[in-house]
Amino acid sequence: MTPGARVEAAIGLLAEIDRGGGPADDTVANYFRRHRFAGVKDRQAISGHIYAVLRHRAQLDWWIARTGKDLPIDARKRVLIALKLVEQWPDDEMKRAFDGDRFRPMTISNEEQAMLAGLPPSEMRHKEMPPEVAGNYPAWLGPHLEAALGKDLPREMRALNEPAALDLRANLLKADRDTAWMALKQENIEAAQTPLSPLGLRVFERIPLGTLETFKSGLIEVQDEGSQLAALLADARPGMRVVDFCAGAGGKTLTLVAAMNNRGHLVACDVSAKRLERATERLRRAGASIVQRVHLSTERDKWVKKHVGGFDRVFVDAPCTGTGTWRRNPDAKWRLKPKDLEELAALQAEILDSAQRLVKGGGRLIYATCSLLREEDESQIEQFLETHPDFSLKPIGEVWREVFESEPPHRSHTLRLSPARDGTDGFFVAVMERKLAPKPEPREDASP
Image (cartoon, rainbow, N blue to C red; front, side):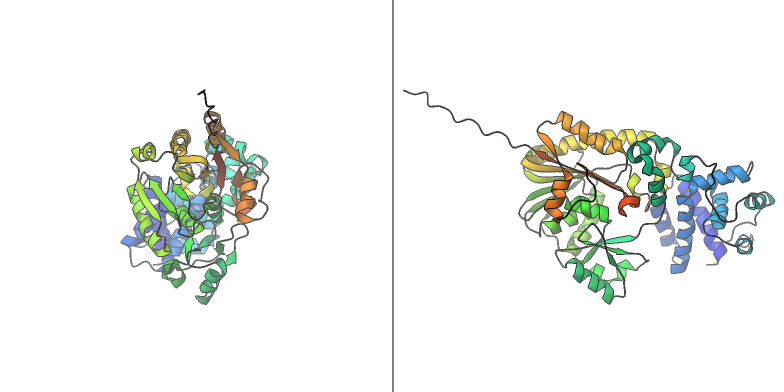
């Protein structure tokens, strides 16, 4: 494909994403499945154009409104400005790409040329941009993000707007981290150890993961370092009975089963049968043999009632806004609506209330989200503890020392991870323990 054809493809895909065509990664993947002729470089270039726009959309729209006068804001205008300010294309290269030839964009109009001429040479930011534009997030989310991040908000938003590295987790059922690292090295893949997770390896380049023997043999799995830590803080041990209540496609299930050394009983639950089915191949590749998959009709499924008080650990990776994953899913921020936060917060409370029934006395309920918002994190825990007095919050520092035999990265009763501060996706983890029921007083013998 020519550079112009790649740009035209990106414009079309961005327009489809704007129309509500689904998550960007799914939309792009579907396009490449339909266009097998697109080579590796074509795919990289098209994806690069798309994500340059999605990451900087608020700033791009601000510049269109400022220098484009009455031009409509659309995918084409966004791509034009992104090519100039984000990707730093020279003017002559842009004119060659937008020449109106077959499969290439129409020539740049006089109005568009005037818009481009009004832009600065390279700087995307401008002192007059409001905070939500400079930070590239929806304006309605500003108060929620500020409440959670305070003065760190600008720094965290900049970090969330950068592409994330590829994090891998060594599968302890087959190899320790050093063995997995050496196996990658033998396949010419350079990886660094993650600073917080003892199982993590970080790769800073694009790699053909699916073709690597290290991956196909189950030595490694893709998992952000923050996600690894969340699952490890469940402190699931060999011989325990454990539930992954919102298991999805099984990423954290695999971490839990490895921590249990494939001994005990691990139940992976989800309301989506399709997501559970996607876990099948991953479990097989990892060598996990103690996992039972259970499809729940709702969070109040009868299965929960039948297994009340039957588990040592119940891990709840709750559905959330995903504000902590914007490095990987920048389009998600633009799909998010105020009602989504309200509905998700209510659903999280329902899920917690149902899942807690499975925890036995002395057992633990672990709540995790990939959200940065207090409404989904600290506020949920405060509300839960108020309505469930038989649970108490276990200080995360205490759990961290038990699991990792080191000092936690932050002093707090719960764990909040963020990209600028910790180099991970945004994650929240709280560990709660059910109090043991008091032993009944021995009855005095009332007989003579």
